[in-house]
Amino acid sequence: MASSIPETKPNGPLFFWAQVFYLSKLLEFGDTLLIILGGSIRRLSFLHVYHHATVVVMCYLWLRTSQSLFPVALVTNASVHVIMYGYYFLCAVGIRPGWKRVVTDCQIVQFVFSFAVSGRMLYLHFFGSGCSGILGWCFNAGFNASLLALFVNFHAKSYASRKRTKVEGVDYHDDNKVKGS
Picture 1 (cartoon, rainbow, N blue to C red):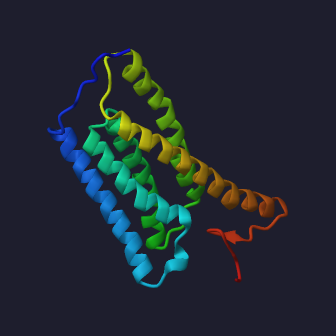
Picture 2: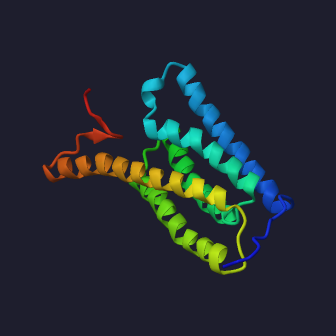
């Protein structure tokens, strides 16, 4: 077992970009607040509000504890958001891409990937040279597990019903809303 765990100092370009990432999560949460204040609360799901509120705490803990895995999480999460916001941008300009499910699949893969990478961090923490931010990692692991469960549930509800209606020969769903209602 590692006798002393190195403490990474929160400075340099990596921490600068981690701070920018953290600030972007504050903006995303601000977007959620604007939706609520604008009276469009029915547009929000528990998953949306929970995710945007808790990810701010997670990013803060990454920075506060100098969590060793945060660079990997930052890159994978930012990559998923590029795909997701690309999809939303196309929808906003009137183009409905046929790959909405891919966005959800990418989010699920991100959480599964985080657990795979976490195994390496735990090994280094307990048997190797050590890693910073194990308490931040604990919060992150619990949060990612809850998000994985919520996204898998969302995936099952959103796409299983589409498959069923397509098998019957008609697709009655458009972004999880029954046409005509």
